[in-house]
Image 1 (cartoon, rainbow, N blue to C red):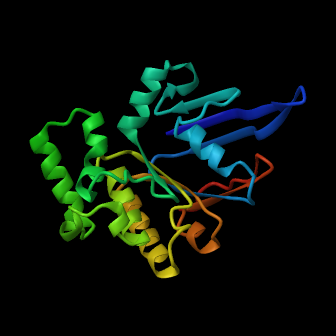
Image 2: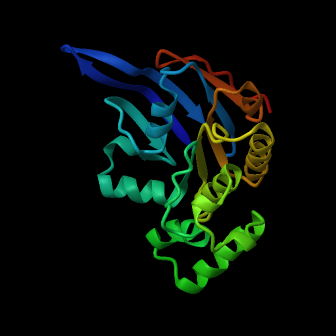
Length: 226
């Protein structure tokens, strides 16, 4: 599903490159649940952004679902990730002026889904996440855990094949964090490929394998055991 070959990303400082990612080689199969770990500044979020097509590498090749992402035009790339990739962020990234219902509905507007279909799909999500009673509330009226649930519902509404999560439990207490990880585990069992960035060993262990990054390089990427 995902093949990264010799991916490097750098910023030029004082005339020489300062590597954020250096010669990353990685293959991720459809249906995997991969955890990316490493100290602060090791390039975890940048790697996730490259995989999610929010950021471009300076060199290397990235094949996603048999398409060479680096060679795609901006519009094609945008279409590819909006159709197939869902994002979950530590800071939720909900739209403050929109209700829970409207936040969850947003990705479907990008995809020009008919209103009647949108209504049914959002109702399903509200039901699944037990948020029906909160659909008319605004993000500021929700707890952190509830906001993250809305973020995950929004990421899943368009039925992505790949879910990317950047420190998804970073702002939550341990009980809320465990609930979110259990939810991810169930989503993965339904066939969604998940790549999460986390600093918590406990969360990383939900994955089928752990990739360690250090100074922008992969330290250890064993193949999945199952």
